[in-house]
Length: 232
Image 1 (spheres, rainbow, N blue to C red):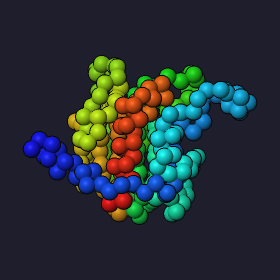
Image 2: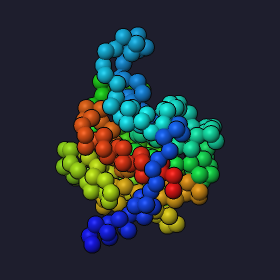
Image 3: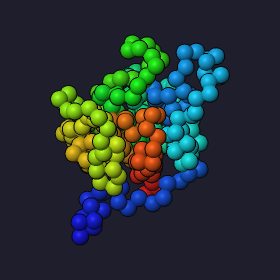
Image 4: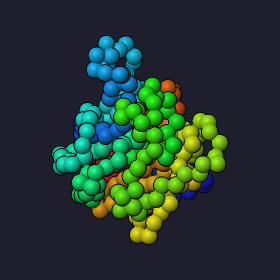
């Protein structure tokens, strides 16, 4: 009975059909997923570092299309992963909102206190975004990202419904008036209907840490992608 209640309470996640693997997946991120960290192009080309493990998990579900800008967003793209993105320009906020409302599927990893190690110092533009700053678009969708700075650091797992997600110093979502969203895992995960589209937002990015590419991280990422990109 408990398992049945969990499935019923998980909303559209519970009855998701299989994802459609032939559709491309746009990727907009400050994390070194497509390219490894490198001081310059020469170091990047001659690096023998293995590729980020998450790249293979994403690519197994569709060809990756890296994006540097979100304005404009091609109407031919229907699936987007935003992983610890940089702050958006006003034009990008408008373009992203319109794209989702027209039917786009978005997986968002928004970490208020990124714990992944970087070779670059704070303030270096090559460093991943330490603090995600997306308040305008989040408020538009009825979400507020919160962070409890008194929590203990360290990797742990959170049961977020149909997935157990590794986190480290995670944030949480608060629903604002008018939000068409469900929260899971104590507010760690939000699934929202935005117009004709869907947003699956995780208030942490530790699941994408390149230093923790174990089975648990890979499985959690795969489940998040399959939930968001299901055909139903």
